[in-house]
Image 1 (spheres, protein in one colour):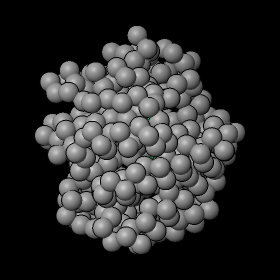
Image 2 (image 1 turned 135 degrees about the horizontal axis):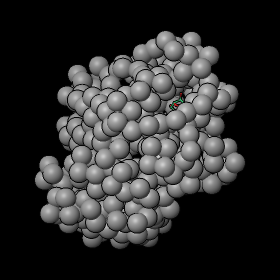
Image 3 (image 1 turned 45 degrees about the vertical axis):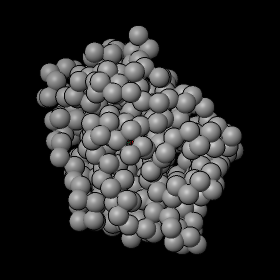
Amino acid sequence: MNILVTGGAGYIGSHTCLKLLEQGYGVIVIDNLCNSNPKSLDRVCALTGKDITFYEGDVRDEALLRKIFATHEITAVIHFAGLKAVGESVAQPWRYYDNNLNSTLVLTKVMSETGVKRLIFSSSATVYSGDNQMPLREDSHTGGCTNPYGWTKYMTEQILSGLAHADKDWSIVLLRYFNPIGAHESGLIGEDPRGIPNNLMPYITQVAVGRREKLSVFGNDYATHDGTGVRDYIHVVDLAAGHVAAVKYAAANTGCEVFNLGTGTGYSVLDMVGAFVKANNVAVPYQIVDRRPGDLDECYADPTKSERMLNWRAEKSLEDMCRDAWNWQSKNPMGYGE
Ligand code: NAD
Ligand code: UD1
C-alpha cells in the first residue's frame, strides 16, 4: 500500500515516513523544500534500508500531482505540506492563505478526480478558541484564531468536513496536534528550524548547544503552578505513530473525524527547562521577559477519543523527549546544514 506524504521532508513528515516504512507501507513524498532539507529523507532511507520516491515540487502544481497519481497506485494521502510560523503569517497573510488553502484545494481536486479519497490532515490545537476549559476535547469551542496561520487550519478543517459531507466516499481524518518535540532516538532526523526558533524546545536545544546565549521565558505571571505557560508536549515519534493509526482508521471508515494528538499532561516552561537540564546534564541559562502576545496560560488535550477510536496513545515520557531532542541537536549542532 502506497501513501503519498506531502511535506514529507519536514520535521513531522520525515518521522512519519520512517514509521510508515517500518510498518511496510510504500512512501511517495512531494515537498518543495521551502522549509526542509532532502537529507532528512536520505537518512530515513538509511535508517530503514528502504526507498522513498521523492518529487521535489509544490502541492499547488496540479500537473505534477496528476502525474504522481497517474504513476503510482496511491491508497491514502497524509497532507503535512504547509507554512507554520505564526509571526510570519501575521506579516505575510496572503502567502499563508495561498499556500495552506490552495495546496489543500488542488490536492483534494486531483484526489477526487482520481478516486483516491482517503486523507489525513495536519491540523493544530491552535484551532481551539481561548475560552475553553482544560483539557480540550474535540468538541471544545473552535475559532477566534489570533493569526492567519491559525485561520488556515480552521478554514482547512471547514473545507475538508464540507467535502466529506457532500461526498460520502471520502474518509478524512483531521489530527489536531498539541506541541510536538523531540526526535528519532537515532539522532539522525529531527527538527531543524530556519533562523531563530519560534518554539520552546528548539530554542532550549540551541541555547544548550551554544548557538544562542539564553532562553527568554515569555512571562511568569500566568495562572499556572509556577506562573509560566503550560503546554501539552508530545514526542514526535508518538505523533508519527498517530498518523499510521489514522491511516488504518481511514481505511475502515468514511466521513470526517477529528482527533487530538496530545498526551493529556501539561508542563510549564520552567518544568521543561528543569527536565531538559536533568535529563541531559547541560546548562540552559534563561531570563524572564514579557509575555508573548497571543499566548494562553495553558493548553492541553483530552486524548481519550484517540485512545478509544484510533487505538493510539502517546507512550514516551518527558525525559525521552528531552533526551532525544538533545541527542539530535548535539549530534547535529547546525541541523542538516552540516
Ligand atoms: P515543516 O515545515 O518541518 O514541514 C512542512 C513541509 O512542507 C516542509 O518540508 C516544507 O518544505 C513543505 N511545504 C510547505 N509548503 C509546501 C507546498 N506548497 N508544496 C510542497 N511542500 C510544501 O513543519 P512540521 O513541523 O513538520 O509540520 C507539518 C504540518 O503540521 C504543517 O502543516 C504544520 O502546520 C502542522 N503542525 C505543526 C505543528 C508543530 O508544532 N510542528 C503543530 C501543529 C500543526
Ligand atoms: C505556538 C503557536 C501555535 C502553534 C504551535 C506549534 C503562538 C502564539 N502559537 O504554540 O499556533 O500551533 O506553536 O507550532 O505562536 N516560550 C518561551 N520562550 C520561547 C518560546 C516559547 O517562554 O522562546 C513559551 C511560550 O510562551 C509557551 C511555551 O513556551 O508558553 C510553548 O511555546 P511554543 O513552543 O511557541 O508553542 P505554543 O505557544 O503552544
